[in-house]
Length: 109
Image (cartoon, rainbow, N blue to C red):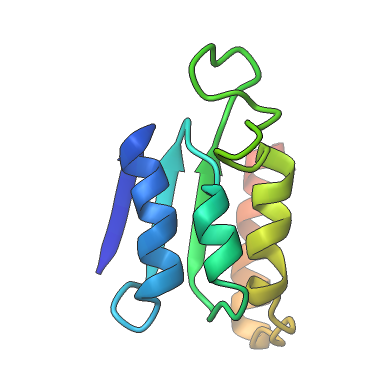
């Protein structure tokens, strides 16, 4: 199951990801960073996919965060990053060959 949200819905998605990682595969947020309460109460996070989109021109939810409200976009990334680093798996040679062919076709060679 996946969850996606914009602004307040995105804040809620971060909470869902922290509290229910066993029920959700991933979340996607736009214009929402990690709320301070989520960062405080959920130090032991489990692995879950997270996609965040946040611009610096957002006049409502600041890219730089808000004291006693929510983390900055950069700190939100840092919040999720340690739980979502995986060791790179070796791709089978057949997949590598297919990917190389696609890259060559795109480049016109």
